Each structure stands twice: as C-alpha cells, then as structure tokens.
Image 1 (cartoon, protein in one colour):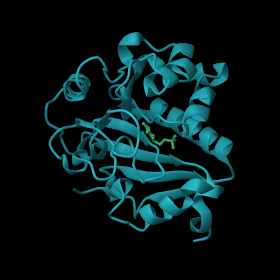
Image 2 (image 1 turned 60 degrees about the vertical axis):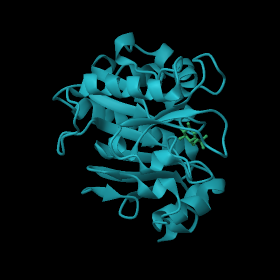
Image 3 (image 1 turned 180 degrees about the vertical axis):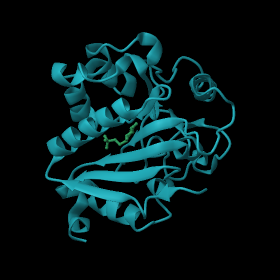
Image 4 (image 1 turned 135 degrees about the vertical axis):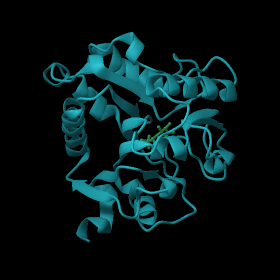
Length: 249
Ligand SMILES: O=C1O[C@H](COP(=O)(O)O)[C@@H](O)[C@H](O)[C@H]1O
C-alpha cells in the first residue's frame, strides 16, 4: 500500500497530557474548518487517553467553533458490550463529549452491540459505506479525514490485538476480534479501513508506553501498531514521558 507508515511518521512531543490534548483539539478544529468538500469524517479512539481531549472539545468556547453539523463521528473500535456498560467506549464518549455538544444524532455512529460481533461488524461497515458512498475504497478519496488511535501496553491499537485473525484481514473494513489478553469481544476498524484516511493520529501518554512506542517507531513487526498505514500522514502526538529517548532524536 502506498502512503505513510509508523517508521516515517511525524513525532510531536509535548510537555504533558494536557498539552497533548490541547494540541489535538486545536488541530482537529483546524482540519474540520478547512474541510470544504463534503462532511468531516472522524474515527475516535477509546480507552482512557482521549478523555482529556473530549473534555476540551466539550468546553463551550471550543464547541461553539466546531462545525458539528457537518461532522460524522465514527469509532475506531469498541468493546462488544451494551452502550450502558462501564467499558463501552461509546458510553464514555457520549457522557464526556457527544451529549454536551450540538451534534445531530444522525451524525453519530456507535458500533452496534446487540447482535453477534461478526454481524455487528458487518452492520458497521454498511454504515461506513453509506457515508462514503461506495462499497469499494477508492485511492485518493479517503474514507476518513482523521483516524484517532491509542496504543495499549501490548502494542494493540484500535482493537487490533496481538495474535488475532483480524490482523490478517485485508478485505473487510470492520471485523470482530476476541483478544486473549483483554476483556470483552471487540469490533474494530481493520488496517484496510484505517489506511483510507487523510491522517492517522496516535495519542500516546505516560512513561508506561515509552518502551512500546520506541519499538513501534522502530517498526517491530510483532506489534499490531507497527502495521498501521495511511494514504495521508501518520502522526504520533505524545507527552515527554511516552516519548522517552525519542524526544532527543
Ligand atoms: O482497548 C482499548 O485500548 C486502546 C488504548 O487505550 P488506553 O486506555 O491505553 O488509552 C484504545 O485506543 C482503544 O480504543 C480501546 O478500545
């Protein structure tokens, strides 16, 4: 696949998690305002890292500037649990961001969780096809403007977990995954869908992720995050603690 990968990705190192979240919020606003042809389509990450970003995006002064009505919100992955479950990425994002801003409900696309994971993955792909307007990904016409990603301590990103068949999926845009080292069945964007993006941005914070980030930057093929590509740009936005020695070079 042509485009950019994690070894050539831009590394942006900021003082701390607050600075990372503020930078990402401003960058997202700039991208959204600059998008003139069609909707601004974003895939959000889950877990704990994006919470600070979502709080900033819900602040009245920020939210008033954001073009919510022409923004389509998707999720990079979710745990296959009811929307009310404490581990649901959709629940977390709704409470902190979605319910606080002027987003039309039809612009918000939670990953369904009431069928089998495989069936719900197919439904989610259909929702993406609907917004994209084609069953086939067209190079030069990305599915997403921005895919936000996190990274787990095992090198997983979205719900692309080590040792799982989803890592080999190249046709489907969305697939099910059952990690052997983390709770819950998952539904996740595949590498193929993530690649169809103008930009992929990893948000990575904390000293606990420094070793993993260094291995991913070096292209360690055993880690799922190392295989992320985008037909646009790939960026790591990190705090000093996660960047470790990479901050110096
Ligand atoms: O399970 C998940 O983990 C990753 C990383 O989460 P974090 O808590 O370390 O920020 C996250 O990006 C993904 O969306 C989530 O489902």
